Amino acid sequence: MDRREELENEIELVRKRIEDAPADTPKEILELYDKELDSLSFELNNLYDDDEIEFPS
Image (cartoon, rainbow, N blue to C red):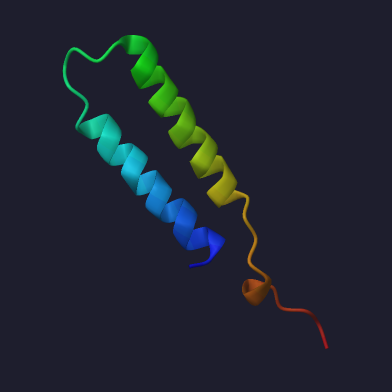
């Protein structure tokens, strides 16, 4: 599994964790989940794949 797939899977897990959080989950915990999601999304958005880069001949 490449890094892109790992990040996509991690993002999906964090989103599910946020969606499935009990109503009495402390605000601080939810904020940490949001920060983790932001961090993973940022990393994914800034990831560059060697395969997608076309070099001029």
